Structure formats: structure tokens, C-alpha cells
Length: 149
Image (cartoon, rainbow, N blue to C red; front, top):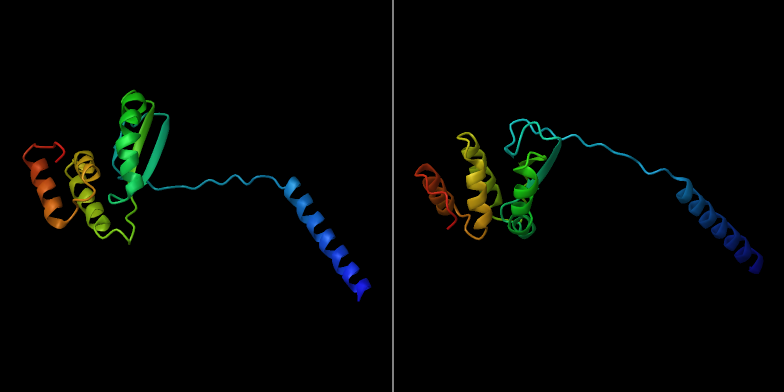
């Protein structure tokens, strides 16, 4: 039995050694993922050399944090300076009850070239995305009152 345990130990040590060698010689995989941004709303110059694509959920606390803490500086220092294009793509998560409705509202106003104003209203008020709220935001946009509530 001791001999069998020694053989098992040798096999395990050889296997661990082979796995370590394989990891050290493995080349990192470069992967390119293509995203169709046709028709997606964007900020910045269409000729900007760099594009950033954000997948957003209007009820996501992390998306909201990005909106409040990162996007203002990104707009000021990179988007408005023509250095990047910033695209917004829908990614409503099922656990957020109003996320799909908010994404649909954003798409509707995109047809009137009002996406970013609606985006800012919805991101600025992520706890107010019920149907009546969205209708109120749309009315504000239609009447030229684009300020945050």
C-alpha cells in the first residue's frame, strides 16, 4: 500500500509540474470583440480617434456613480476636446424593475435627437423611473425644460 501511495504521489507531482510549465509558456490570448454601434447615440466628434462604448442600466448604482463622478470630467477633458467619442448602449438588467422601460424611453427620444438630455434626466434621478416619471421627463424635453429634477 505504501508503494501505491508513492506512485500516486509521483503522478500528482508530475501533473502539478506539467501544469506549472504549461502556465509559464502559455501566451496571453488577444481577443477582439466587435460591437455594432450603428445608430447608437454618442457624444463628441465622429472623427475622434478613440471610441468608448458604455453599456448602461439607468437603475444601476454603478452606472449612476459613473454618471456623477466620472462622466463630467470625461466630457470636459476628452469628449468636448475632440479626443474621444462616447457611445451609450442599452444594458437593462432584469433585477431593476424600471430599467427596460427607461432604456425604451431613451430610444424613443433618440429619434428626436434628445437622447443625451433624457439620459441626464434619467441618470440624475435613478429612483424616479416609473412610467409617470418618464412621461414627465419627455414633457420637460418637449417644452425645453431640460434641467434635472
